[in-house]
Length: 406
Image 1 (tube, rainbow, N blue to C red):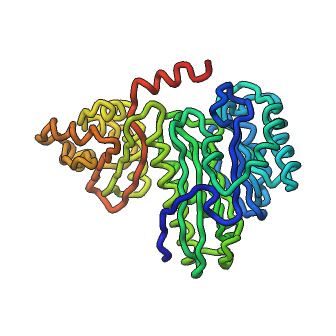
Image 2 (tube, rainbow, N blue to C red; image 1 turned 135 degrees about the vertical axis):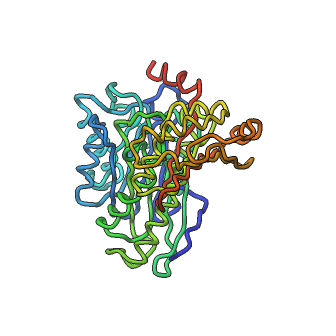
Image 3 (cartoon, helix red, strand yellow; image 1 turned 90 degrees about the vertical axis):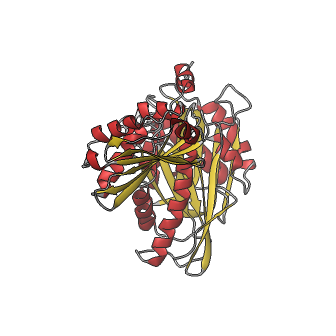
């Protein structure tokens, strides 16, 4: 299998993609970009997965219809307004597509539409319409402006790229993401846009994406709230020149590995930039009876508000981890559980066979003061494992969400 390499770049790392981002006036803050565009030189195979929330933003409905044939050529996304729970939401999302299509001279049904921001406020199409000529004029082989244009409460841009070989041909894949709050399993609880110049059929692209999210974006939680506008979309334009992937095999496995390498990096970026967060938490569960038990256990620990608060305070309160495992619903024997806390400062055993052990509180605190912390849970009951990502729970989370709308 081809080696997967992390490289510099973003959604324009792959051949044939350009992107842009501008401030068009949706947001009052003029220094924040609020409209982003990603365009493929050629029509691309495409796939997407969407939020499981029954309340869905109008852009998701429109995008799902547009991708029904498995193709797309552009992504337009605004921030500052979710275009959700609005009577004219579908009309606005379709208008966004039509305006971009007219400017780029492409089919309006080949456009992925996304919105993020406040729910329940009408989205005025006027600033978008007025901004689209500038948005298109600013297209370039650099994804940084687009990465900024999709941000809401994010404090940092989230972009990553990888290279890999399919049949001896170098291919590249890049992605940008937004996500800081209202992030919780299941499904892709954020906005993620991925581009690749690899040639792969729409059927296999969807298979790769839908399989990947079960181990990545479905294992990510910030605050227990699943958003209404979550989407992960991928476009593959085939411009690398490899033989098209149309079935499972070594080439498909390489593509899936590349996709997973990229999405894991984005998961870590999103978790580390959780609203008000000071620490990235990673729960690694090993020794489970089944994969499902491992995933359930890992997510329960990451979603535990008490565990998250303890990590904020650098308090080695392992009992909260055991508590989360106990109510997770996973098929585990709590009398076999071992727990370690780990960080660049070291690793410490805090629980053995479901019971406390003597350990240095000072050393534990030193370990938990780091920016990235691993909660290592060994269930000692099988061979299955899983990983989940999250962040600590801080005072600032409440401050941010106490006046998010006003």
